[in-house]
Image 1 (cartoon, rainbow, N blue to C red):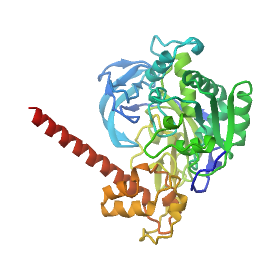
Image 2 (tube, rainbow, N blue to C red):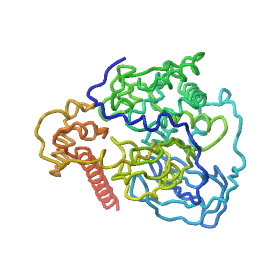
Image 3 (cartoon, one colour):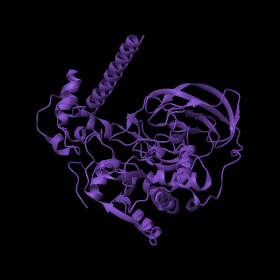
Image 4 (cartoon, rainbow, N blue to C red):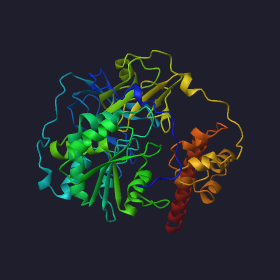
Length: 449
């Protein structure tokens, strides 16, 4: 194994929910299903207000390759199609379903399909039709990763779950190892990989033993890696297991690897063998403000409020509610945001955890440089972002290579909001690039005219 550069050791916090077995939430009174739950083109509604839908029915799609279809999480009536709050982007067009309580499946799902007799094209279509995305948080459309343009020899199933407090993947590995293993074998068959790993940090010995036993008669290697954030970032995993470094601006396929989350592997098993689309996920609801931290099997579209209420509500007033983990998650202003495909956790913390000292000027101590797993200079990236010198941050310091893991902000003694400055810089660079492209296209059109 190889040790990646930098990293930090934030408080674990997993003891709050690691012993909580997965519980299925009851049907909510309303499901708000966003058309944007993935990286790529936002889906267009395939239903209209007043339509009756069934569980697993396609309700959102887009013709773009970079897209993930959206399905009804249960049967019921479409009562609204409107913009609603969204955990990752502020707001998004959403299909609002009023469940009828019958939970009836749509007709025609191919149950009990033998993946060994399926072609690669059929497997990719099954994954695409199911709307599967990376379930570790990035929400990258899974079918896109399964069509690499370069030879792949290594498959890594990511069970690291390096974000503090989150235990959804941990519980999934303990309670549903066969689904993860079958999904891994399907991906292995499709990609034709010689090396296949299910990797986790060494703070999950119970999951390691369960997965090791499940994979005993396969060529899939179950491995543990040192507990060090951000061990679960795909570039870090690839380096730790293979010694290969994904080049700046590159993708895992550039070094012959594909990485998928354990939840994604389980969803692939459902989609390929039974035709079941991605309409539910395991989500950790935890934090020192939550009365009874739990790991929930929850339908996509369920509100944060209902999930929190199912966990006994707040025992103390939270100062912050976060979508995801404390390092890379996004603070929320509205508990009526829905759980989406990439929702690995809901974290409610009191001021004990979130109290933040006033930001001060950078003291040039270099701790952020030591902590950065990408070998960047976060202090300068934050200064350039604060000044609005976005192009210098890109051209001189490679800001677009930042994975936004938050190690720099965590370690900073001046309490600078480094990641926020970097995110702002990257967003501004994308905006500038889009404007320049539009101007170039308009100029070209004028010439052609």
